[in-house]
Image (cartoon, rainbow, N blue to C red; front, side, top):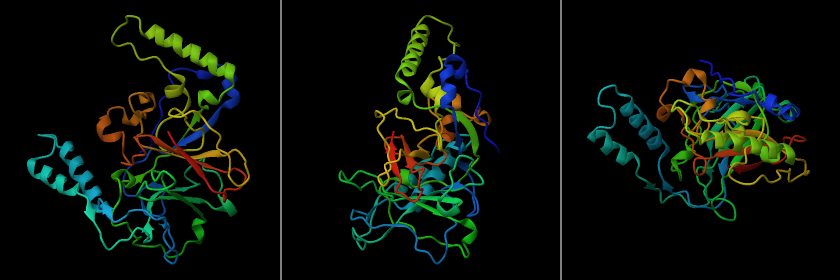
Length: 343
């Protein structure tokens, strides 16, 4: 099934004609639970990974011998989802609550040292044929594969992510690795994605307001303040919330490729390539939800009648405190190390 973004509530270029010069596109991936194959673009699906190539591992020293088992996390979600999907008496039974409690337990693996190679989790793979805004990879690579360490225990503060990106030429892969290694434990269930098929859709997007010219940003702010003041006046209870530039007219929520990064949590800061100092472009956004209370206008038309509780978080991936991870790549040389920010 396709996913279709509703028309924007306002024509933002009619309000601010200067925005036409900044118009771009982004591809909303619209991940939804399914059974993807290695030949498909997916989130949490099987990777097109050569059988004779080492699977990505995290070698940084940190704890990895205690946490929840990935299989328990998947089973927990299945039990809970089935319980709430029942038409009669929805919600977990006493027996199911007992099982859910057992599945939430952490386990210790004393045989695992803090420096043992830790298999990374295959987060997503994207074929250029499926994703219009995915840029070319190095040396004509057509497939981007994304992995991460299932513990946020990296960097100077020991709270950072460890992300690994791999470009490859899909037609060169022969025998595919049938059973990739899995970590015995993960530090947080939000690192474990549920298998999802993608429904890519290219939409129009505009930059984060704080990165626009100062006079244009000020005019947008003034316009939004006026709408907010008007909304505070007594009105019919069915009057819709006023549209805002940030949450309704510029940058869509959810997993997407290309376009512009949002900087709604921190002030914008330069994302320049550490190798060549070139300003980097947004490659991929990994979001904790497909929409929320502030971005509901982006909810696909096909999902309008679905309960938000069950369908706004199809991948079950959680970034930070339910935020989004923006991954940046060098436009000059995709082999240069990526950078990222959490918003």
